[in-house]
Image (cartoon, rainbow, N blue to C red; front, top):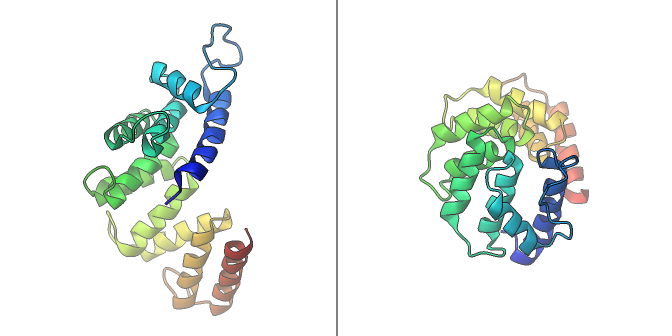
Length: 200
């Protein structure tokens, strides 16, 4: 679990980027109310007054409730805002909502809903969702077990630098899961995984 202090520093950096890069007409709107000297209080108040602005805002607003920054931790609001954002097409929110359903966080566990959300975000190129699809196919979570699809998902994400996917792809090659057995390729992937895990 991320400690509040370190999580807060990361969140404020993330929110500043979000506000800078994702507001509609943020560069041209002379009437924009975006706070210029942005601290957590100003950002929270801005988001509170602009809840129906672009989708990226919802995910950031959700983080305030998750961490209890400038407000009390409110798991219901966190889930509802994430769900609202996902329904509007925000890809990261689809992934996060999928995780909520996958693990039963802030809602009842629903592996089928989780799989569908991962699948939807994966179609938009979301790397973590593609990886999660691999896990779903590998273990038969929320869908039929399909080792070939699991292998393809792990391979796609490993090639894009996803560290855990490298390890899981290595397992597929080592044991011939969804592909032909190739212990040399497995060893290479385990080596890449170790390098990334230890030194990144």
